[in-house]
Image 1 (cartoon, helix red, strand yellow):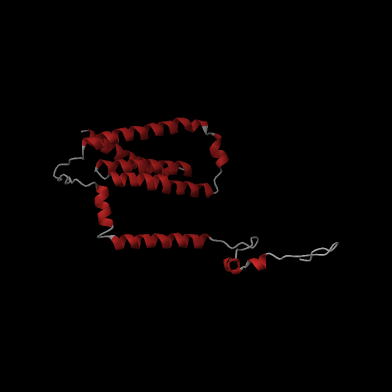
Image 2: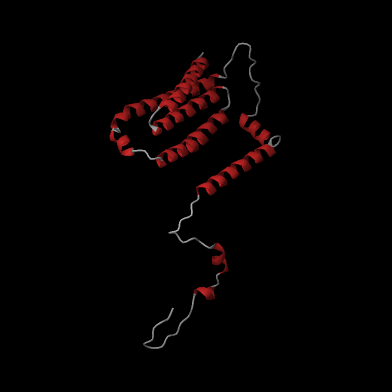
Length: 203
């Protein structure tokens, strides 16, 4: 019974936080609602026994993608002085959101220990002594190895393309010549001078 309650709780909060992500006018609030949606989606993964995907969703999406979104939001032309003007009034909202997440973690742990959700007409998943992390690793590095490597290459090309597109040439900055630095020898960098008394050094 607790599994059904937690399922509907997580599903409702996923939909609600997704809607709030879209309708929020403040971009920072939109990212925070998106983080809440990621947490609830991780709870749904946890209910079906895919704890690896749940942890992956929290670590990768909340820890990396959401931070990247916040970084992009900080680069926008947003009047943060106006946003910080009423910072104290957001404490109750933030504290309530933290309590909701803590309650979800508590209910999710209880539902995960209670077992998977049993639906009418749907066969229960087969229990194996191996964890789904081991099974997923075996599939990725045996049957889907080339597809997994191809996905890595696509992400690498996307990363290099993003760097190339955002690279700007500045005229006020002296560029670095790597080849000239490699060809440079100590005798070209250091010159021993022996000037006479009262004579200067000509460069």
